[in-house]
View 1 (spheres, rainbow, N blue to C red):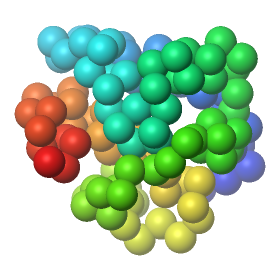
View 2: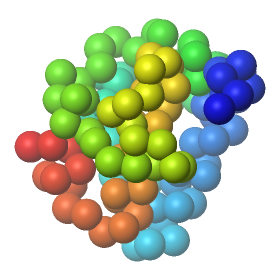
View 3: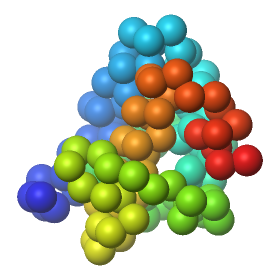
View 4: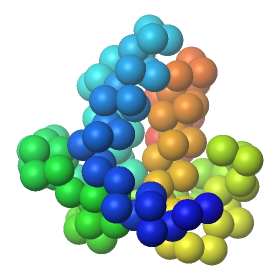
Length: 116
């Protein structure tokens, strides 16, 4: 993985792709936002501020209020990597988010996605 490239990617640039992936499968933007807020601790206003200021992924995750304590329950493969085995902290967080959005697009119930 090219960490420097991913770190510098604009979260605001990738966010519409998360929305598109979910809505193409009948899910909603609100569900994507709920997942992001659950994962990172941002509230809706904080999330929107990060999008509006076009922060990169590294900044997005470094400024996250608090990663959800149940984040360790996110396991499985995304983009060919087991998320629980990714050593780099920021990359693991990016892949957690990818995994959650993927689960949403695959029709998984929100209670399961949010590890309730």
